[in-house]
Length: 320
Image (cartoon, rainbow, N blue to C red):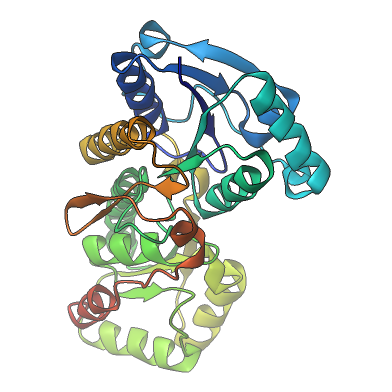
């Protein structure tokens, strides 16, 4: 019987459980056994495994996080760590390894595949949406909607007190969440790592909006832009008025996945097993223009994914 190793790695994302469910049940339909490794690559190195069947994944499609759990594994970046993981795959007679995670997880899977000789398959699940080869990732839509709900509530208070609110969302390297949330919430400004902003221009625009009669100012900022407290202080000094900071943090990672995140997880997880049944390893699953695609897994961590600059500019225009 073919055996699949399954691991969730990196930061958790809403919809990972739905992807686990899809992999396990599609594998069962095809007489494939699934061995789940707990706590990401750290657990793989330690051999923390259990066989997963259809009943193992009952009632998890609506749950956030991952039942397999995840953890950082700096030792996985070493030769010793990769060798240890390869020995576990050999011990458990694993024919394919499916990794559910982001670009870093895909890179790790690829390196392990070279050492172990086990074909690997990547299922993109990260709220950052920064995996190449796919238009979107499992969990991104949920994170955007969680942040949007919070900002809509913040807008009520901002309007009532006629204040400026600086809302920090996740995105250390990329501004995908900030752009989507900023556009959908009608934020006056969106600050992202990909587009350099000028503090003087920003403050002049804030003053212009006030003269136009705006009752509130919402600035959505990706965490990778810089120190949110320093930026808030600069705005207060140059534009005047009170600036309140709201850091949404890990609230964006938790909660039940949206219908879209669940659907994507089902499609990606099922397609990953189809790659196994067709003997196609070292691939990733993605979606492009509404169609499922399966490029080389290296595309996931080597391709630079462009931000939707047109949406960014449109949101900027409509903020008047």
